Length: 260
Image (cartoon, rainbow, N blue to C red; front, side, top):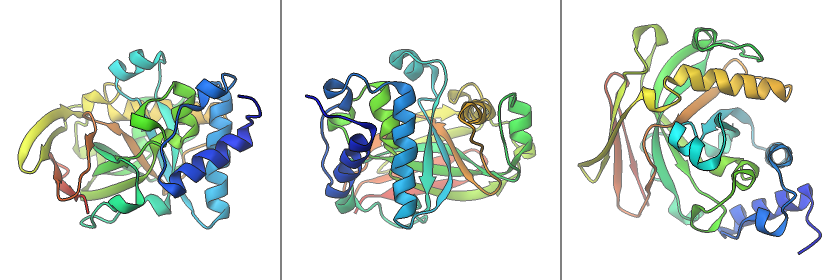
């Protein structure tokens, strides 16, 4: 199939999101969609959202675990954008009627106290720019059938961004050993997975530094006041109607999601 352009990919992905319609991989129809082009698509997709009234409030990291990176053939996380339309207040049910096939994963979340711009950002300097640490959930929702995609596909799709929740306590990063911060993931009261902050690049601050440096190579930065989702601590679980998903952290408090 011919006729694909970056603009057409943006329109197709936005249409899928609006229509709650998953489709096939773009790369199968347009092999020329490489990683650099995919990030251009991602930026344009978010620009259109902003043009429609949304506001960029932060960034997220995807594929932060080393196992997932090896599976996708990359050596650093993906970055994507968060807007205010993606914020789901704690306690509000996940709006299943507005999504395709959402999954949830617990995350360690940073609120940025200072602007962070690469290159040359280290984990220590990244953590020094963090104002507070929070418990969070990201609700991902791929616009590809069965969450099946190649690397450029998922980057273009803004890394399956959909909704996110921030809750629990606001804790200073100086008060925590984030590599050891534990999380218990539960479904309907039963623990189904466990992890620590080390699951995210060995330490969430390492992921934050990698994100700042990756954005810096594109002339972008993580701005003061932004929210940063550092990546899933466990595998994502499906959000279903009536299902209660919980995350209990060692020091950051707990969060609950309910599908409705």
